[in-house]
Structures are given as structure tokens and as C-alpha cells.
Image (tube, rainbow, N blue to C red; front, side, top):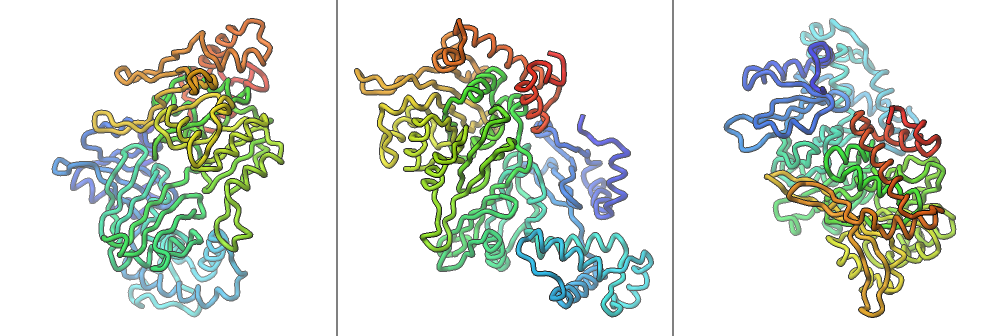
Length: 547
């Protein structure tokens, strides 16, 4: 049960006066809200939700729908400065500017955060009676000190960090762990892709006058300043979130627009994906065996179908002692292994100093990794991926394609041009799609196709279906059970099984382990990693529950 108890709620209210005031107002309008931490997916099925959940720091989120609303809406609850606090805020900012030269130089936002916190602590004097005295004095400061109450300090410090280090008006979204994407168009309500409620409208609007300034501020944080001469930019924020900004009104007719794909600090686990129905324990068991034995595969699908999420969830299936080499344009892959060589492309600066995916993949062949994971293959660098496979390096990557036929067509055609006879270096293709059912979006692995090789007689690539998703029953079927080319011919034979059919006993055993993990509510990513790696090290004894 994730609904918060009375004592937990009371503690939150005591520490956050701004939340108290908001809840009192909401009670009068739509009734008592429910408090959740964490937020369960089942709440999205409520017709008229009225719930609040905490994010990082002082921000809370209220999601609600009344009878006169077409859909639920998202409202950020954050501190609001009163007139006295606004005056003190101005005084503190002036003193920060005055004292800042005395401090060490800063390079990163993290450094700036530390220095600002130090300055605020030096400038502020906590006086719980200050509010009454300062109202009479109209908030005058005393020398280089400003008297405030502890509540005022928290509110003012939040605003200073939000304005100078954070993301300004969208800071509330950047602190919400349930946000996948932020969609901003000047003069309109910001919309979000929420992990539970999907597309949802917020109470935040960035007007046409503020939007150009805000777009420049975010682009500078990404290290790729936007301008009329450079109206479209892509970049990465300090926390790993990926941004796309369209600045010029000549290009974006409604004014500056922006999309930010949020970075998730803790990846979603394989057991959580099983619980959500993205795949089942059997399909995950198949992937577990394939990754242990170094098979190569592509995880394919359309935009925003959850390819990277699934890739991050299955990486822990790689044995813990292996060396992982990842290459990415933007940092999205998360690897728990100790020996992880994480490399990014560099597209800015002088041409001779730029590094593209080709360069990184070539370097991978000289680094002797056990697994190579390009974050995403988009074009001609796919040829290098096949070269890596041919030299015995297992490779796993994501790729935009809706079925195995499209994958083969794109890799054997321009600009990648992999010879058809080389396609058997790829062991299988996983297809994952975003689908709509009953008005709600869901993500499903729809198939796994095993690549058998090139057939000269028909001049084509032979493939067989290993797993298939039945949309009518929303169920994954192991269509090649007792007849899997990869499990029997590529894994069991090389692993020394006397009877290749014994590989299916191992498949069933690992399937059972994953099902038990779901039954035991082992959903935390790092707990799942410990279970899988415990099994690698000690067998069934390494699992922290009875099988």
C-alpha cells in the first residue's frame, strides 16, 4: 500500500507551510486529497483523481479532475513569496552579488549550488521573531545580514537556487521523478508525459515575452546557445536530460518551443517491466540466457516506445565481472558493472577535435571489451557494429524499425550497406512498440525474431519467430519453445550441453526466479541487480528468498 498514513501526512504538513495552505484551499473546493509515496500506476484508472505526491525538496504535485474537466490536470505546489519575503529576497540577491567575488570560481552548476548555499548561510540570520519586526521596518537589512525566520529562509533559498542554478519556471518538472518528457510552446500551458497519467496539462505557462529569454537560458545550460542564426539546437542538461529547442518565430510560428526528455536517475527494473506487462518472465528469461552467453541483438521500435528503458533494464543480465563499453550521442545508458567504459560523441569545437560514433566504435575494437553497447544506431556507423560482431564482440543496440524485415532492409541498403551474408552475425531482433488500447498508451515487446542466416537460393535472410505477443489476450507466447535456433544451436552447443534440449530446463528455472522476484515485490533496480548477480555468484543460494 503506497497511500500515506495520517502521521506521515502530518509530518509533511508541519515541515511545509505552503502545502498546508494549499491543502486547506483544495479541501474547500474538491475535498480531501489522498497522499501517495510512491505513486502507484493503478491511480490512473480513477475517473476523478484527487491526489498529492512529493518530489525532491519542497515541491509537491497535485493531480486532480472534477466533473467539469475533460481530463486530469497537473498542478505544482511550490513556495510562494509574500511581500515581506520578496523584499528580503531582493536584499539577499544584492548581498550575494556583493560577496560573490570573495568566493572561489565556479565551473559547474553543482559548484554554483554549493557557493550560493554558503553565501546564503553567511548572509541570513535566523530569528523566529523577525517576521513581526521586519513588517514594521518594511524588511530593512542590517549591514551585510538579513534577519529571516527558518520558514522564510527555506522559501527564499528555494527561489534563489531555482532562478540561478535550476531550470526556472520548469524546475518543478525537473524534480518530479514521474516525468518522462516536457513539452513547452510559448504562451500555452506546458504539457508533460507522465509515467502514470501519460499526456497531462500543467498549470505552468511561459508567455511569449518570457519564452525567448528562457529558451536562451536552457540552451546555454546545454552548452549550445540558441539564436536567430542558430534557431534549432539539441543538447544535454547537467542531469543528463536531453533537450531540443526551436527558437526562431520564423520556424516555430507560435513562438519558441522546447522538448526535454527527462533523465531517470534510477533505471526501471526488469521485474517492473514484467509487472507492467511490457514483456513476461519467459521472454526476460530468454534474454537473460542470451546476454549471459554473449549473443548480439538489436532492440527496435518507434520513437518513445521505451527501447532505452528496456535496454537499461536488461543490462544487469550481463555477468558482473564483464567489461562493458558504451558509445552514445547523449548519455542515456546506465550500467551497474564496475568496469564500464562510458564514451560520448563530441560534435562541438574545432573539426579536428570532434569525435563521432565511427571513432568511438573503432576505438572499442582496440579496447578489448566483453560487450559493446552503442546507445543507438542511426546510419552508416551500423557497419562498424557488424564488424565488431564479426571479430567476436557481442553487441546490443537500439534502432528505429517496426519489424525484422525493415531492420534487414535498412541494414543491407544505403547508407549502412552490410552484405546480406554478414547478417548472421546478428543473433536476434527484439521489436517493442507503443500501442493505444482503450484510450491509454501501453508499451509491449511484440516479437523476438531469431536470425538463422543467408539463404543463397532465395537471396534472402532466414528468420524464425521466437516470441510473439497476442494482442487479444495481451500475452507473450514462446513460439519456438523446444525449437529455438539461438538457444540450441548458438548457446547450448557452445556451452557444452550433452543434450541441447537441456537449455530449456535452464530457461524454465530462470523464468521461475523472475516470477518469484515479482511475487516478492523485488522491483527496485539495484535490488534486482543484486538478485541476478547473487545467482551468478552462488546459484540459488545467492537469491535472498526461497524458490
